[in-house]
Length: 181
Picture (cartoon, rainbow, N blue to C red):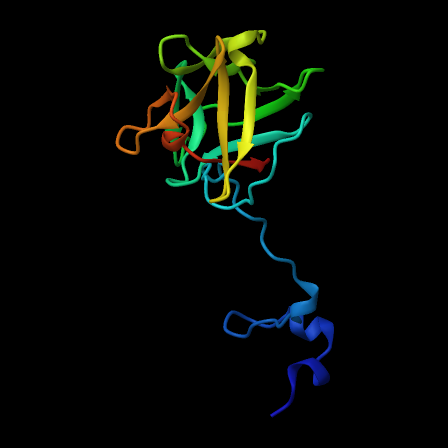
């Protein structure tokens, strides 16, 4: 039997009827365009924690649960997959005297103490309650402290409800990672 590519001319190939196919070498075809879809939901998986530096943006992730500090509906919560319903990108800035601030990039509000034993993000300009101190821990991660008059209060969470609160006991302080995004 004759090889269709070597014995037939182009006009013969174009006049072939129904059951005979025309063969196209694979190097002359292109892949179909990828289907357009929404981006994959945000996940706190992946990324390597680093020391926060002014001018960079971070996901602040709880070391023990892997959940990220997220501003959702005006409340600070921990979420694994906030998707598009929460602000989880925190831009770091530093004062001349060394305090760090973290501003949520969409709403423009700063992470800080609420004065009632908790943490919040609702101030558009940082003051004393938004000045944060970051301390590395030997076991990994960092503690996040805010000033409470002459004492430091540490950012803490209960694994059961994911709410953020402040503790005066360093042993109860949660450990956090700063993952550059």
